[in-house]
Amino acid sequence: MTPMHYLHCFVAIQSREWRRFWQQRTRFASALVRPLLWLLVFAAGFRAVLGVSIIPPYQTYITYETYIAPGLCGMIILFNSMQGALSMVYDRELGSMRVLLMSPLPRPFLLVTKLLAMGLVSIGQVYVFLLIARLIDVEPPAWGYLAVLPALMLTALMLGALGLLIATWVKQLENFAGVMNFVIFPMFFLSSALYPLWKMQEASPWLYWLCQANPFTHAVETIRFALYLQWNGAAYFVTTGVTLVLAGLATAAFRPQRTRILGTRATG
Image (cartoon, rainbow, N blue to C red; front, side, top):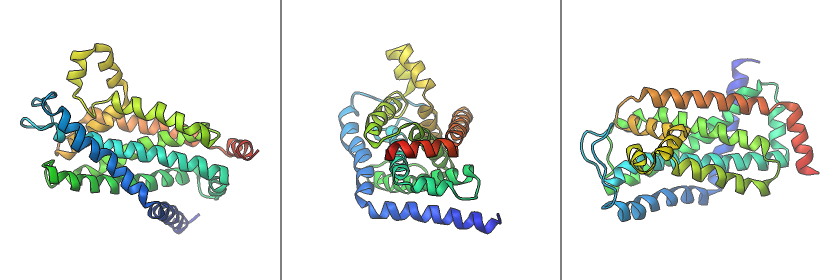
């Protein structure tokens, strides 16, 4: 295999994902409506109740909208990753995923390229959300929009790998909705996306430790600090470690024998 073979494969998978996204424009709207409702309605209702003190990475008191904006960026990636996993189950039932895995290129390259394609689509939606959020005074530093890109990509890879791992074990589309709810809502609500961890600790120590054990918490903190031009080494380390573990498990689970068995069961 020459570098051109890898490049052609990368471009083909990327273009296929973007074409699918363009053909499902309602998906773009729904991906933005959900976090914007949280930002406009939920934040307005809780602004007076949940004051946010001066905590890193912020240098002064902030509005609640400013606090939850990084968490809502994570929400966009989380929901898109699970939708991407749903499309993988659909592709597997139609056989296109098995056709992809029959390529002579290494399977890890194919799967990581698929995750990158889904991640780039999600990141595009995150930037649109951040631009809209500026209209309601959520204004991180200008360089923060560039500095946050690696954090967004790392989060997209972590959640995409989780979705890929789930898609490996879910045999039918009918079962996927329940699995999505079981994964999405605990990950989102048991995190620092909506509330600072110190408030969780005040409310309940065991809830605080659940939030600390949640990898989505560390992904959100990675985004939050990067968006405000600060480095959170612990959050980056945990998010990177979880990404590598999930990607390794997902790649191992998509071995040819299991893929054929799953495809036979899905079509049987």
